[in-house]
Image (cartoon, rainbow, N blue to C red):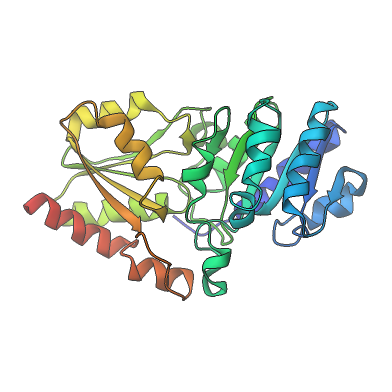
Length: 314
């Protein structure tokens, strides 16, 4: 695997193509066109970009109004603000009326690193996946982002998409393989039946590397990419539970209400599958670079492999 494009760059490319073909496709930003990688969109299609300034709540409400008028808005804002400051507008103006607004949470998770907890979005899955009618996605690489965007520009349903800031490691070879539609997960590694690692977004590549490390230690792991956090792929989760009966979920999110919780909700009624959570604890995150913070909380290849080895021995 190799480093590739940022998800934001891919989103911009796909949005330019969609908006060129359909003038109803709009980009709405909250003083965030630069960090959202939308500068090329602004240059090529200035009449289809709406700049709201630092007014995230207004951005969501205006986007809902545009959607009710037949437009197809993609609304960009830092995930920390879109999923917290604007959550009432998302709830009332978008999800309650099932309004076709695509909410793109940029710089998600711990992406803002040293800017601190005011700028981290380590609770966004907990809030967004609890809202009715709202799909929730986390793409893992450029191919998956491309496939996801090609679905979203045609979809009439509201969605929240969380992306990070850095270039993503390639996991897939094509958009068609990477994204199969809402409610569809991907089994990206199938080394055997000792344990299943489940991840989404930037942690998928970490899970893949951890599975490689575990194989060298004689532990055979599966890796599932849950790109569609909501709706979640219950069929896939149950299938790998039938095989391994032991999960480790890996997420750039609080271990409360996030990806691990979503997985546990599926397997809890079975009573035969253990779920261990790797993520951020119920405390303010430490300050540091993204890699430093991931290492501190054990969200890295070696720590996950060590953890799995200890879990299986126990």
